[in-house]
Image 1 (cartoon, rainbow, N blue to C red):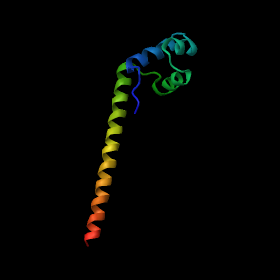
Image 2 (cartoon, helix red, strand yellow):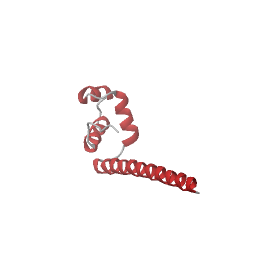
Image 3 (cartoon, helix red, strand yellow):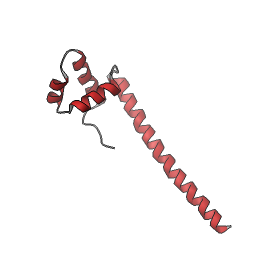
Image 4 (cartoon, rainbow, N blue to C red):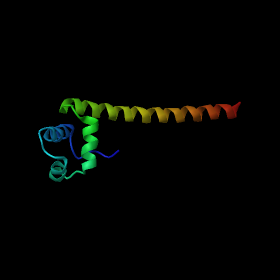
Length: 88
C-alpha cells in the first residue's frame, strides 16, 4: 500500500483551508496534489480533526494487517486439511 506524502494533520489543515474560502484549484496547485485527490480526501475525511484522522488511518492499517494474517492462516488451514485427507 502506497504511503501518503501528507500526514493526517496536514490533510486536516488542507481541508480547513478549503473551508476557510480557498478554492480547490488553488489548494491543488499549492500542495501539488490533483483535484481528484483533494475531493477524495474531502469526501472521506471532511469534518475530522488531525487526531481523529490519525486514529482512522491507524485503524485502517491495523485492519489491513489483520486481513493479511487471516488470509495466511486460512491458507495454512487449507493445506493442513489436504495433507490429512491424503494420509487417510
